[in-house]
Amino acid sequence: MMRNPGQDADQQKHKTRRHEREDLVQRYRDIQREVDSMRPSFKGKPMPDIVSMLENRFGSDLDTRTLDRCAQAFAAGEAVEISAPPTAVAVINRAARCTVSDVARVLHVGEPVEVHTKYNDSWVRGFEIAEVVEGGYRVRRTSDGTLLPNLTGEEDLRPASDL
Image (cartoon, rainbow, N blue to C red):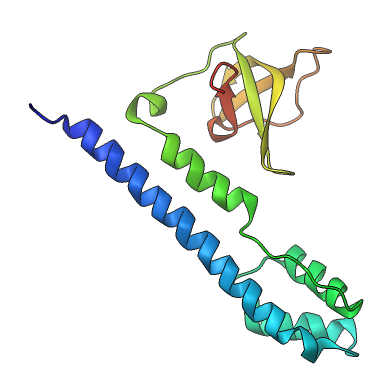
């Protein structure tokens, strides 16, 4: 039986993306353990000192919002959960689902789509393509016909039937 080179490449890409996801999640588990071990040293320190300590140690690994959230929790004597940023995992997940035929797919005016929201890393139904323009898509909310204020990139859209 002849092997299809395209299928082999897709399988290899999926395997690579799965390893990237696993590595990212493991990296954040390691950060969580280290942060937990540092927590007693934050007791009684003012928040700016806690932020500074966290930035010095984790500045390249954690975004500013996560550092601030951690500092606030530690200043209050509370624990905090640190996990891989949902958007980073989503980018890897979307790339893993992508095949050669997906890359060539063009969404058409009137086509029902789901929009990816970075707020909680989820897909929201109830939208359609209003216009295809250079640099992205104009998207309309179907419930009231309102156009979204900004162009939406193809990485944040998927056909509504792709559940």
